[in-house]
Structures are given as C-alpha cells and as structure tokens.
Length: 121
Image (cartoon, rainbow, N blue to C red; front, side):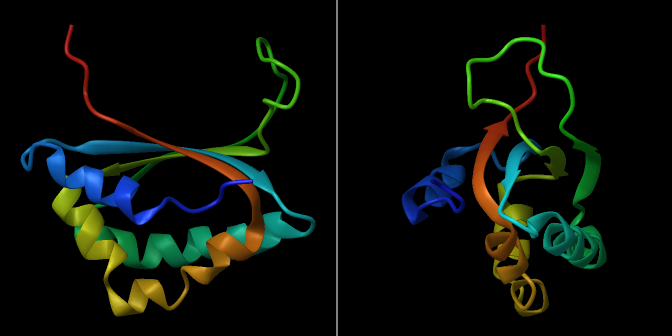
C-alpha cells in the first residue's frame, strides 16, 4: 500500500502558481500501534511547520462512514495549508523537520495525500 509520494508527484507541485496556497488532505490508515507514533509526528510537525507558514487546519479521527466502498474507511484525516508550493518544499528539505519525518512512515499502513487548490465559485 502507498504511504509516501514518489519524487515525480512531489515535483509536480512546481507547476502550481507560486502565489497560491495549497491545501493537503491526508487520509490515514495506521499500522498496528501506529496511532501513537503518528501523534509524535503531528507534534513534530507543529514545532517545525509554523516556521514556514504552515497552518494545521483540521485533524480528526475516522468515524462513521456514510458513503464508501468496502475498504475506503480511514483512521484519521489531517488537512494542512501551506502558503504555496515553495513553503512546502522548504519544509520538506529542512534538516530539523527531516529528523522526525520517519515517524510518518513508521506509523502508516496506507495513505492518500490529495493536493488541493482553492476553487473560487
């Protein structure tokens, strides 16, 4: 199951407008014992993310599934707002942040990371 994006998926962020925020929706399925490890990752992110203008919009545990196919329920959802793709890359390459990034991979069995951009209607 997928946990981390490939480099080409990360590099695609370079095609986004530099002056627009990106909102990353994380759908998370924990490995056995992974919830506690992910909590450590969240705390690590909350220390380092704000230095790059990152806002943690919402973190919630999965609940009652209203509409989904079998196997599409998730243990948690996390919505994170980055000022722009440049801020995302800056955080991703920051040595202090990278020191705890392994916690994410150690905690997850599967994840969906959906990059979204504002949709003005």
